[in-house]
Amino acid sequence: MVSTQAPPVENSGRQYLPSPIGKFKSISPNQQLFPLTTTVNDRDHMEIGGCDVVNLVEEFGSPLYILDEETLRTACRQYRDALAREYPGQALALYASKAWSCLAVCAIAASEGFGIDVVTEGEMQTAFKAGISPANIYFHGNNKSRAELDLAITSGCTVVADNWLELQTLAEISKTAREPIRIMLRMTPGIECHTHEYIRTGHIDSKFGFDPDQIDEVFSFISQQPGLSCTGLHAHIGSQIFELQPHADLGEVLARWFEKSASYGLEIKELNVGGGLGIRYTEADDPPSIEEWVKVVSSGIVKACEARNLPLPKLLCEPGRSLVGSACVTAYSAGAQKTIPGIRTYLSVDGGMSDNPRPITYQSLYRVVLASQMGAPLTETVTIAGKHCESGDVLIKDARLPKIETGDILVISSTGAYNASMASNYNRVSRPAAVLVGNGSADIILERETYEDLIRKDRLPERLIADS
Ligand code: LLP
Image (cartoon, helix red, strand yellow):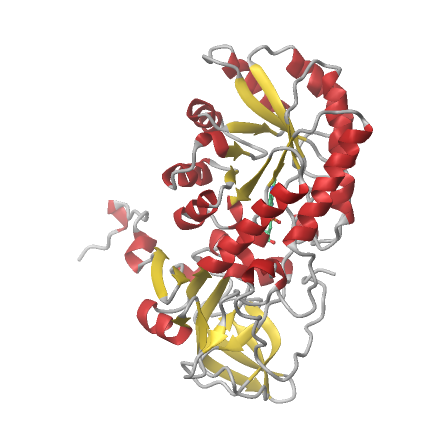
């Protein structure tokens, strides 16, 4: 089951059921509706990372992304520790920075021993600025520009080659490069899984990666390029996946290609299984834990390699959503309400599809609470609407909430992945600030855009300036 299809589940009449405190190590953050440090304080307000959410909004404004450092670090450590425990060879987890590319998140992931997966120069430059060593940066993308490739290569990143044009360009660049260019190959695994059509990438009809039917031609081409050093193979099935079987099957598919590569004289040392582990957006979502996922992925590779007498490769994986998704919430201020008798009540908030484009794009479901009155009974059914000039700008349909007054603070959870990174300025709404919370303090990690920021790149040609 994925949250895009699951019906909203009525909860137990309470807004929030706290996680057992002090046991973070064993709680998989991706299975939680709220960040691990979430509590209710004696003012009946939601507290995250020891910070009162209502106070945070007073200080930093709304909408506000609130990122809990403890949750993010716990998720990173669970991947890292599970890989060390479950995989007998070398392993490296990469943070798929498309989930939220910003300096602070990249720096935290790196400080927990992660490398970084980037897909554009923008994400690459962010990783560089966050202090990530290029040796641990893997550059993906299905249409990399020549300039992007040049930058990645001269900086020492690994390029994950995605298609023929790119391979030919790499071969050409390698003729004048000082040393062989380190590349991996992205293949389409041909594995189906149940997630939203837009975020499925493993099936054959995908714009990403080489078609597996062309694998011989690809290997043969690379084996004739002395300037290309192909060190690994990569496949990614899709995102927000709750099933484990596709990831078990992926080991088999990757090992088959790995075996074949040897007959072309390629020295493959790394297999990258991509990301994809889902998170809990609503009560109806029941994803496996990080540890379960790592176990399945690791044993899939080990079994498939052993069966073929292949040496154990270095195992890479690229989680995005399951690292940062559950670590962040978005706080909004409640505004206008409109009741259409017999139909529904709309409650508008001061953000919407610009700070969270997932509901309108993927019909994603989310969970909301009234953070300024956590103990209040759930008496109302309201549809949370954004402030954009678009009827579809609805964040949550028919949410159960206490009675809401204008100015109340609402919190929507699990907004750390693909929210800030996909945010827009539609209707010239400035993008929210983000704070990193922990141990009772909050640091800005993303400043709120100002209206000057919004028009900074606008130019008014002289002839359009009205005569005064
Ligand atoms: N590796 C590759 C090559 C990917 O394409 C992706 C995600 C990941 C890793 C990370 O997957 P994750 O662990 O986050 O599932 N905007 C969509 C999600 C698009 C995912 C794109 N690729 C959403 O909001 O659901």
